[in-house]
Image (cartoon, rainbow, N blue to C red; front, side, top):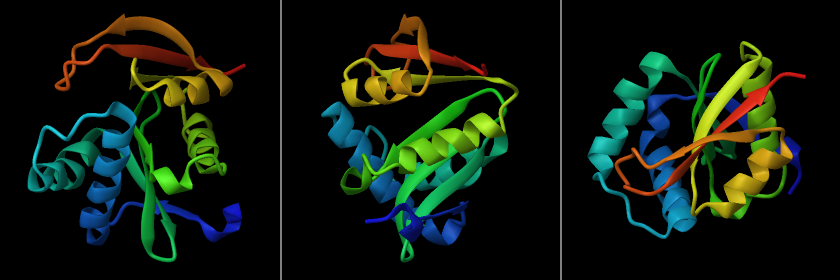
Length: 149
Protein backbone atom coordinates (compact mmCIF):
# COMPACT_ATOMS: atom_id res chain seq x y z
CA UNK A 1 0.00 0.00 0.00
CA UNK A 2 1.58 3.28 -1.03
CA UNK A 3 1.16 6.48 0.93
CA UNK A 4 -0.29 8.10 -2.18
CA UNK A 5 -3.51 6.10 -1.79
CA UNK A 6 -4.25 8.00 1.44
CA UNK A 7 -5.76 11.48 1.64
CA UNK A 8 -5.57 13.79 4.68
CA UNK A 9 -8.59 16.08 4.69
CA UNK A 10 -10.52 18.26 7.13
CA UNK A 11 -13.09 16.26 9.07
CA UNK A 12 -16.63 16.26 7.69
CA UNK A 13 -19.53 15.09 9.93
CA UNK A 14 -20.68 12.75 7.17
CA UNK A 15 -17.77 10.56 8.31
CA UNK A 16 -18.77 10.65 12.00
CA UNK A 17 -19.79 7.02 12.43
CA UNK A 18 -16.82 5.66 10.50
CA UNK A 19 -14.40 7.94 12.36
CA UNK A 20 -15.73 7.01 15.78
CA UNK A 21 -15.68 3.28 14.99
CA UNK A 22 -12.06 3.44 13.80
CA UNK A 23 -11.08 5.61 16.79
CA UNK A 24 -12.73 3.31 19.34
CA UNK A 25 -11.29 0.15 17.76
CA UNK A 26 -7.79 1.63 17.63
CA UNK A 27 -7.94 2.89 21.20
CA UNK A 28 -9.32 -0.41 22.51
CA UNK A 29 -6.52 -2.33 20.80
CA UNK A 30 -3.88 0.06 22.20
CA UNK A 31 -5.23 0.07 25.76
CA UNK A 32 -6.86 -3.33 26.09
CA UNK A 33 -9.90 -1.54 27.51
CA UNK A 34 -13.40 -0.99 26.12
CA UNK A 35 -14.63 2.57 25.52
CA UNK A 36 -16.17 4.26 28.54
CA UNK A 37 -18.73 6.33 26.62
CA UNK A 38 -21.35 5.15 24.16
CA UNK A 39 -21.03 5.69 20.42
CA UNK A 40 -23.58 8.55 20.38
CA UNK A 41 -21.66 10.43 23.10
CA UNK A 42 -18.43 9.89 21.18
CA UNK A 43 -20.01 11.24 17.97
CA UNK A 44 -21.29 14.29 19.89
CA UNK A 45 -17.76 14.88 21.26
CA UNK A 46 -16.31 14.60 17.74
CA UNK A 47 -18.87 16.91 16.13
CA UNK A 48 -19.42 19.53 18.83
CA UNK A 49 -16.67 19.60 21.47
CA UNK A 50 -13.38 18.65 19.82
CA UNK A 51 -13.64 21.18 16.93
CA UNK A 52 -14.06 24.12 19.34
CA UNK A 53 -10.37 24.05 20.29
CA UNK A 54 -8.77 21.81 17.66
CA UNK A 55 -8.41 21.44 13.92
CA UNK A 56 -9.73 17.95 13.17
CA UNK A 57 -8.43 16.10 10.13
CA UNK A 58 -9.15 12.58 9.00
CA UNK A 59 -7.26 10.20 6.76
CA UNK A 60 -9.28 8.61 3.98
CA UNK A 61 -8.49 5.67 1.78
CA UNK A 62 -11.16 5.25 -0.89
CA UNK A 63 -13.74 7.04 1.31
CA UNK A 64 -12.88 4.78 4.26
CA UNK A 65 -11.69 6.58 7.43
CA UNK A 66 -8.37 5.11 8.57
CA UNK A 67 -7.09 7.89 10.85
CA UNK A 68 -7.83 11.03 12.85
CA UNK A 69 -5.71 13.95 14.02
CA UNK A 70 -6.99 16.71 16.31
CA UNK A 71 -4.47 19.49 16.97
CA UNK A 72 -3.85 23.18 17.43
CA UNK A 73 -0.71 25.33 17.57
CA UNK A 74 0.23 24.00 21.03
CA UNK A 75 -1.22 20.52 21.44
CA UNK A 76 -2.13 17.26 19.77
CA UNK A 77 -5.35 16.10 21.39
CA UNK A 78 -6.02 12.95 19.36
CA UNK A 79 -4.00 10.89 16.91
CA UNK A 80 -5.39 7.47 16.09
CA UNK A 81 -4.89 5.19 13.11
CA UNK A 82 -6.78 2.06 12.17
CA UNK A 83 -4.68 -0.89 13.31
CA UNK A 84 -4.41 -2.24 9.74
CA UNK A 85 -2.91 1.06 8.54
CA UNK A 86 -0.22 1.62 11.17
CA UNK A 87 3.47 1.47 10.31
CA UNK A 88 3.17 2.75 6.73
CA UNK A 89 3.99 6.43 7.32
CA UNK A 90 0.53 7.92 7.86
CA UNK A 91 1.19 8.79 11.51
CA UNK A 92 4.46 10.42 10.51
CA UNK A 93 2.62 12.54 7.92
CA UNK A 94 0.02 13.58 10.50
CA UNK A 95 2.73 14.47 13.01
CA UNK A 96 4.57 16.49 10.35
CA UNK A 97 1.38 18.43 9.61
CA UNK A 98 0.81 19.23 13.30
CA UNK A 99 4.47 20.27 13.74
CA UNK A 100 4.36 22.50 10.63
CA UNK A 101 1.29 24.35 11.96
CA UNK A 102 2.55 24.53 15.55
CA UNK A 103 3.97 27.48 17.46
CA UNK A 104 7.28 25.59 17.58
CA UNK A 105 6.27 23.52 20.57
CA UNK A 106 3.68 20.74 20.91
CA UNK A 107 2.49 18.66 23.83
CA UNK A 108 0.45 15.50 23.88
CA UNK A 109 -0.55 12.77 26.28
CA UNK A 110 -0.32 9.06 25.68
CA UNK A 111 -1.16 6.20 27.96
CA UNK A 112 1.71 4.48 29.75
CA UNK A 113 0.40 1.07 28.60
CA UNK A 114 0.65 2.19 24.95
CA UNK A 115 4.31 1.31 24.34
CA UNK A 116 3.87 1.46 20.56
CA UNK A 117 2.77 5.12 20.75
CA UNK A 118 5.65 5.94 23.10
CA UNK A 119 8.19 4.52 20.64
CA UNK A 120 6.53 6.40 17.78
CA UNK A 121 6.54 9.79 19.52
CA UNK A 122 10.07 9.39 20.86
CA UNK A 123 11.30 8.44 17.37
CA UNK A 124 9.83 11.73 16.14
CA UNK A 125 11.49 14.00 18.68
CA UNK A 126 9.03 14.04 21.59
CA UNK A 127 10.34 13.68 25.15
CA UNK A 128 8.50 12.83 28.37
CA UNK A 129 8.06 15.91 30.57
CA UNK A 130 5.43 14.63 33.00
CA UNK A 131 3.51 11.66 34.34
CA UNK A 132 0.04 11.32 35.79
CA UNK A 133 -3.31 9.62 35.52
CA UNK A 134 -5.95 12.33 35.47
CA UNK A 135 -8.03 10.88 32.67
CA UNK A 136 -11.41 9.22 32.52
CA UNK A 137 -9.84 5.85 31.75
CA UNK A 138 -8.03 6.07 35.11
CA UNK A 139 -4.83 4.86 33.49
CA UNK A 140 -1.35 6.24 34.03
CA UNK A 141 -0.34 8.57 31.24
CA UNK A 142 2.73 10.37 29.98
CA UNK A 143 2.96 14.01 28.94
CA UNK A 144 5.22 14.46 25.92
CA UNK A 145 6.69 17.64 24.46
CA UNK A 146 8.27 18.44 21.12
CA UNK A 147 10.26 21.63 20.56
CA UNK A 148 11.22 22.67 17.04
CA UNK A 149 14.97 22.39 16.41
